[in-house]
Every structure is written in structure tokens, then in C-alpha cells.
View 1: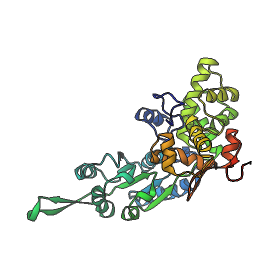
View 2: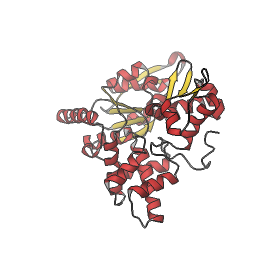
View 3: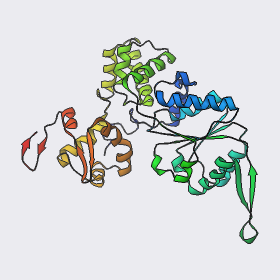
View 4: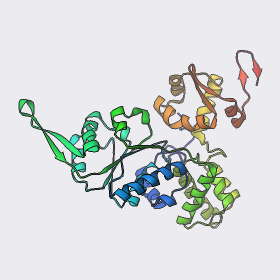
Length: 347
């Protein structure tokens, strides 16, 4: 099994999604204003203009769609927009909206300027979308009253409001839904300097004393994702507290992360096991995704959506028409010699 090197009851520290309990902790580290949000400079510049323009006209801000990998700050930005606009933010998710009545109840209770944040909006079912279209476009709620020949349509007026949608899978949104958003923003992975600044800011909130080199040591292993950076920071804090009387140095940060089996590029045992399976069992590939999933006893969607993105970003994995291949960089990182089976030579 792909997780065999990790205890079954311990989640991956480099997992980009957050459990409900962790989300509560994340809220304490979240910036509440745009000027406190580190990174995504182009996005912030445009967003600042849109916010100021909407406030100048005394109107709700246009509907906004945020997309990007998990853990990059989509939820944080939604709450920041609400704070900057002085608006109440109502939070829901695509899977939570199971019936038309669920959405109708939320929309009918929104006040002027309120923000409805829909996380995982790509998972909203088609019937819910149909109700959302006129609500976003005309601030109206179209309901069908009755059944059969006596059924009639009732249109209810809504207060002007803003929908902020968040998704990791932009391609899964229908074109009509995408078209109803006035602005679409892509959140990129963070550079090392931004990651270091995020860790320093979080350490300050957690009342930790941290120097730039120690923050850098954590940032390098955080996979360019703030959620992972904050998670690693808390684990490093635990080791520093128990083993070193709270003192934190780059060496202690490295010690803590080595204990957690996270290497200097942020790969954990799960990542390494996937690459080693590809290299040792399939001579580095190419191998089909279904075959790789069977060899690791994982779902194809899990490999494709959870494990592969960072390996692709590092250049350790290639997706080819014939299947997945481990790159020369992956061999070098794992200390493996590459053998070409077709010519029988070492590379």
C-alpha cells in the first residue's frame, strides 16, 4: 500500500487539504487584510483596484472566481475581501448544497453586499447551478411552485450580493457558470522568499522566536504552499520545545523535519515510495496510470490529483502518451542508477 511507511492513523504532513480541526487552527494564522497577505502580488494589485472601485460606487464587488491548488489561500482571500468590503461572509461548499431549497434558503437570507463563499464550487450539481444563474445575473430567485399542469414559476427578488467561488479544478466548471463571474484569479505556488515571510509571520503569531535561516530551512520543505508551511512550523516548534528548551536554529529545524521523514525538497515517504515503485518495478516507465495505481494499491484519481502535481513541478515525473516516467532528476534525488533496458547501459 502507498502509505505503508506511515502509521495508518497519522495524516501526511505535506497533504494540501486540511481536516476540520486543522481549519480552526488555520483561522488563527490567517491574515485578515489584503496588505497582510504575503505573495500573489499581481492578484492583490488587481483585487485592490476592484475593491476600491466597488466601495467608491457603494456597490457589492463583482462575483469572483478563485482557482488554484489546495492550501494556497483561496478561503483566506474570500474572508479578506469580505473584511475589506465590510461585508458578512456566508460559507458553504458545492457538495453541501444537495437540494435547491438549501441554496434558496441561503440566498433569501442574504443582506445587501453580503458575500456567499462557495468552496469546491466545481462539485455543485447541475440543478443547483440552474438556480444560481439568475441569482448571480439578475439577483432573482426562480422557484417552481406546484407540480404537473398546475406548476408555475415564482420569481423572488434578492438583495444585491457577491458570489466568491473557489475551485481546484477550473476545467470542471461549466461554461455558463464561469461566464457569470466578473473576475477570475489564479493563485500560483509561492516563491521561497514569500514562503519564508509567511513562516516568520506565523511564528510571530505563535509567539515563536525564529531567525531567517531557520525560516528558510522550513520554507524549502513546504512545497511552496502556506498550509504545509504552517503545519511544518508547528511540528518543528514541538521538537524545539521538547528536545531543545524551545530554542530554534536551522540545525534544529532540519533535525525536526528529518525526524518527520521529510527531505530537503519536501518529499515524504509517500512521494518516495511512488517514485521507487515506478523505478524499481517498471524500470522508470513509461507505465500506464492504471498499472501504477494497481502496483501501489491506490486510486488513479488519488495519484493523479494528490501525489503527482508536486512531483511534476519538481521535474521528477513526466506524463507521456505511453504513461508515467521517472526523470533523471528523480533517479539522482533517490540515489539510483538509471538502466536503459533497451540498450543495457547505465546512464
